[in-house]
Each structure stands twice: as C-alpha cells, then as structure tokens.
Image (cartoon, rainbow over all chains, first blue to last red; front, side):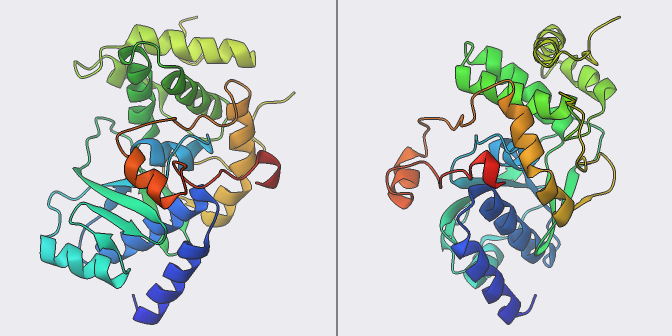
Length: 207
Length: 69
C-alpha cells in the first residue's frame, strides 16, 4: 500500500469516534499491510463479537491472531507497525487512538470459513461464529454465571437467531461435543432460553 | 414484531460488503437489546490501567447510541 494511502487511512481511523468502526477500520488497515508480508490476520474474541453483533461489549483494544502458520519476525513487525506510527510492540501496540494486541496463532475448531467483511482498507477475517458461540456459552458457565458473559452470549445468540449472522448449527453441535468444550447440554439450554424470549423455535432443540 | 432480518446477513461463505455491513448495524444492535441491556462492556479487566489512561478513565470510546446507527 502506498505511503500516501496509509497516511490517509490512519488519519481517518484516528479521527473515528465510533468504537466499532474504529476497530473494524484498524483491523482492515493492519490486515492489508500484514497480508503484503504473507500473513493473514483474524479478528478474535470480544472484538470479533462486537463486529458481528454491535453488542456494545468490547473495550478499547482490538484482538488479532494470525491464521497463517508462522507470524513475522520482530523486525518486520516493527517495520509494518512503524508505518502506522504505532507505539510499543512486539505484541501490543498503541495505534490510532486505541490498542492492538496480536495474540499469536488462531485457535479454531470449526470447519466453516472465517467470516469476511470487505472493510474500507481491505477485507477482514472474523473468528467463526460457531467457535465463538460455543466458547461464549462455556465462559458463561465457567465463570460462575458471570452476568456480563451471559449477556454477551445472549446478545450473540439473538443476533444469530434473528438472521443477522449465519451459522452452521450442525457444526455448533459438533463443536459442543468436542473434548475441548463438552458443553452441548448448556448450548442447547442457552439457545432455547434466548429463542423462548424471542418466541421463536430453537434450531438446536430436538423436536 | 417480525424478528427476521430485513438487512443483509453476515454469510458463512463469501463476504459481506462494507455498505451491507453498515446497513445491518442497527438491526443487530436492536436484536441484541431484546435479550440483554444495551451496554454490557465489562467494568474491569487486566487491561484497565492502559485503557483508562488512554480513554480518560473509561475502558473505551462511548458506543454510538442505537438510534444513530
């Protein structure tokens, strides 16, 4: 990407005051620059949930992982992030008025693709909602019924059930049965709870 | 109330355009608000120190109100 374009993008992101747009645009610019070096980045965790749901959940940091097997050497990271005037590194940076954390290789069990938004400075990949759903339900129970985790999972499921985000329910069921989660009963119960509130049928509930 | 989406869905295969993603923002927020409070940002985390320093005592920028999405 030309330096002039990078500077224009950076000015736009720095001025952006909507936290979700700011996050999406920064992910877009970083993804484009890292891709030029052969690394595909994926937005993960609460940052991905925010872009998928508008749930007013995420804080002022953007979490990214790399989908490609190897990441970049520290010197190359420094070079790329230096183009953005980023402070810090090699895993956590302050850039364009927010924080960006590069967490390492992405961990996904779903066989579905990463979701993709054609964002202003290049496409961004988002963690697969099937993984996120099962993980968020797990966190809800694991954290001893944390209200915040519960609300996040409920909003996510509501957006899915009402057609805002497409998921493969067979894949959700398969993931929830994996040894890494083993929480299918909780997923079935939780999705039914939200479906009941919305007065619609749960796709995970047996007829 | 018809809960089924009248806006473009974030699909499994392929991609959603930026314009379509923007169009769906309000719908997605509203659907979440049916089952949980509007703002659910965590009150605390291990990143508090750096976040509060950058965001004037908050943990991030304020969210855009639903009606302005």
